[in-house]
Length: 103
Image (cartoon, rainbow, N blue to C red; front, side, top):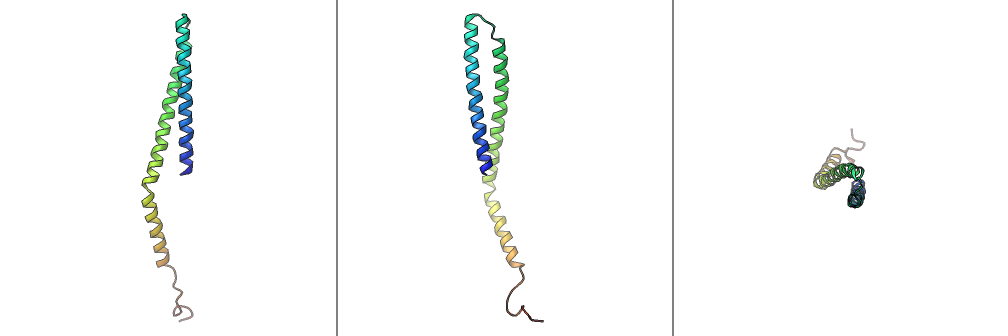
């Protein structure tokens, strides 16, 4: 579970970084446009970064679903552990005095 929590934090940081980069590129493109310069390269870079942002958000949602599924299965995992414990004690050889050394 710690793995997924740390992965989610990394994904959120990446999303924030990409969003900051996109905002900076938009500012630069607007400045270029205001000066009458060509901003085509900046617009292409923004499009590429927006695609990257979309993928990062999809991955973050995947991680969130994994965490939710893990939490949702907690009861099932506890029940399974109890069942295994009960079955292992039921089928363990008895160590009562009658069974030890008796023919």
